[in-house]
Image (cartoon, rainbow, N blue to C red; front, side, top):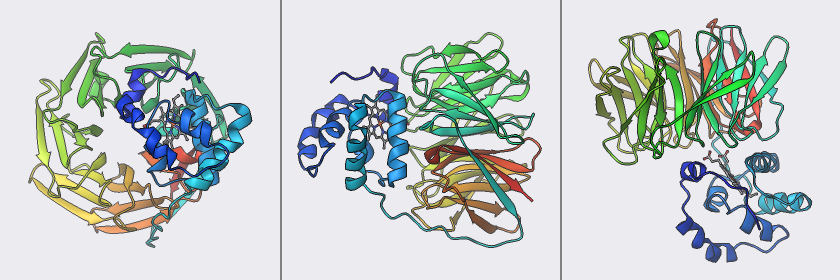
Length: 415
Ligand code: HEC
């Protein structure tokens, strides 16, 4: 069987190794017999380990359909006449395992959920971007497209990227209305001009810098900053010269992830691979690390309030955490639905924290008011399918969310 060629960068992003592939046939012999086993055991292990789909939480039949749509988009050579066999085999053998039931906490704030399916099936809308014109953009990671939604009319437009399998991840807009993205599978940051559809790519200068993530402009758009999770780096591109400078983390597998600026322009980011936060001097790129109290904490996304207190979702332990660099004090609160809820996408709006429990079924939208230290929460009506990121709309009246596993973008209107 011939496989579509997946760039090394993607394999790297998957953490796959060919040595691991070689060990798999033994494990696969233990799989139950069934129509579709032959295709699954060959096609589905061509790019990543079988563990990628056998060791996780499993999927519902609809969930497997979305996964297969995503894999088809990425180039998995599933013979069309065997598609149903493959789906049935996966559905029968790796059904969705029970997930935490979300705990709804009542309160005074009212929200209204709206959501739109994106045009390309299996897009895996990874990150949302709310722009000043009221539009919501999304990165269609496995469709290799960026998309734009006008929530007033429901009109949507998709923009194809230039390099196949770019794997667009985070998004940010510049003052001219261009949309910048981090090509997580293809080692570049790129700019889409929505007026012309033209895409410009800026390659990473170091072959090790494979997976840029979370692009963010500093004040005045002097630099575009980004983290590189598997490459274990943080980088910035000078917008005048387009020169890219990279810093490697002092400890292996730190996995820099979510990033914010404080009021003084210092860059803060999380280390998903360790229980740490880190800051960077924006001029010298001198790095300082801060260890969080619990060794098992895995901070994923980061938010900041106007008092420069940092807030993080603790993905591995199911907590909301805060860290005040002025006092060095860290605090934490258990997420409403417990330790297995994988808090993920988060943001701050008017000094209130919002985040999503991505493993609760349906996903739970959580509001936390730092003043009263009170939680309020809502089930996301579409299920959410793991909300990996969110951001406030530019009028400050709502939240844009990307619903990766249900192939939708959403808007949460706060009343
Ligand atoms: C052409 C390469 C390729 C093939 C073949 C392939 N995959 Fe994937 N798969 C990927 C990539 C790339 C990702 C995304 C990696 C990431 O973001 O970490 C992925 C991710 C996944 C995920 C995780 C999805 C998620 O949202 O987290 C599952 C499940 C999966 N693949 C199942 C399968 C199955 C089942 C097959 C066989 C039908 C298959 N893959 C074949 C490349 C491939």
